View 1 (cartoon, rainbow, N blue to C red):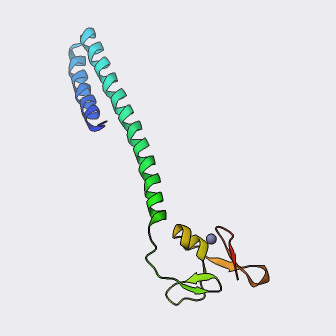
View 2 (cartoon, rainbow, N blue to C red):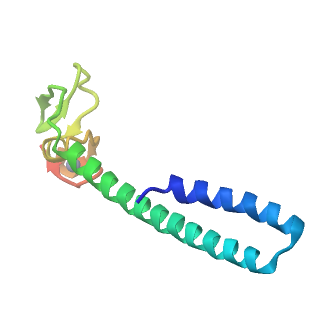
View 3 (tube, protein in one colour):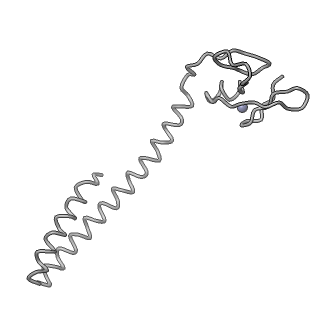
Length: 123
Ligand SMILES: [Zn+2]
């Protein structure tokens, strides 16, 4: 549903109301008010429809981003990945392989590297 035309129509109706109110014709004002209400109801429906579409598109975008093949080539160290030769920053291989996310790992018990996001442990 188009949101622009009900809004334009509402603005035109408002101008007409201003003109009519100068001469005060109650029946005509009531008619224009009824038309204005309809236009605003259309605009409200269109806005709700757009809001739903935005939510749905955002979900679609996040799914597509998750499915997108990683563009960087990781190197492997102790079951973790590192990038651009920066071996001090070890990332979770599970997060990167499944979601393309670069999740930093931290030192865990028994010299394991533990992912801060999915808690995957690698040695
Ligand atoms: Zn992870």
